[in-house]
Image (tube, rainbow, N blue to C red; front, side, top):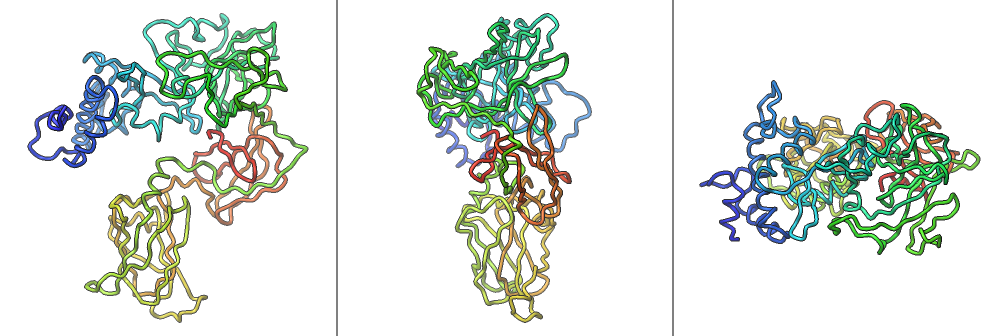
Length: 534
């Protein structure tokens, strides 16, 4: 396939000018990256053509207000107004009508946030189904920053699956709605290295199913089912991903009850008995493990030899530790990527509009995800400033401040102050004292009220505001007996919180009682927060 053939295939019409979404140079780069994918001609190019067409239509309809459901044509409206379930459903219907093999997959609950997600998957030239979220992505494009973080993954099929909870449950047993379809198929093995796991189950129940549940800020959410063997007092689960924290649970009427303590299977290396993610054409037989309450055994009743360990997190109220916390939710991967793009950014300054600019600061390292200070070695007075990236990528700055001496102040250390800044409306979000807003332009221009000697630049890159915020009230809780129990409330004085004599060894969560809902449980080991999704 030539570049011209590719250009015609991805554009919905023959364009005489540059494409609306891609410049010619960008389109050529995209062409070569797509050619490196397997199955390009059969699957990738048709999906790319669909992707380009839908994105163009969404851009044309950017200011369109929805009054009613438009069914298929909802795809043409901005994606923020269209949920992923509908996108996946319509995409699958369209692709199948065009002869493109596609299926519908989902995770009932992200390990690190309180919602679910749906996406499509299509086979590459080797027959392995590769996931993608339409219409923004093609095969595997959102894998590294998005889909590989999904936990348990299921597919909705046309045929029934006798191993689904719909058929396995007792006649009056409650099953979570999202797991209750008779056409549900477990596909977790394609996304993670998985094992089969047998756990002790001693609860008295007439149910046939137990569940592995995630622990969230609101409680527990079932994401995987296993069959209960009441005689052996065991529950067996298949396709259990490694390095994810679960708690064993079951339904008592409509209520979800817990059994035992939170746990995770930890492996420091890939295990040889199961395939790595996105490498298997069909469900490979997983390694079978059994936890007897004291030891983790293989199905052959011998010690595990591949480095997998079973770690239980029991909150011990007779043993204590101190905690120093800096965040209530981990830094998001896409924000970390934006922060890395700030490395090499520089600040230009001049005192008069027609003077030459001086470079007064360069960001030599990737900035931290919270407030930080850049020292400026300077004795000159400046009034006009430009902040720009070295690679012409967007800055993604949430807030910026200049500190120094104004023209009327003596240059003593005690007199250094935050300088009053003004900017055009385009750049206002960077000086509005709101960390939730940000500037994404590749350059920003600011002006001081009067010339000043700049000694420090303080800024915070684009953030979800999940660090510790001075003045906000926080609650530290620990997980025990299936619920969150509050340990202590404390108001933050700066960017960290210190807690003394916290019950050791458990699962914890830090809640901001003043602002925000993004809060993720964590473990605390070696003086560090270890997020439950890691």
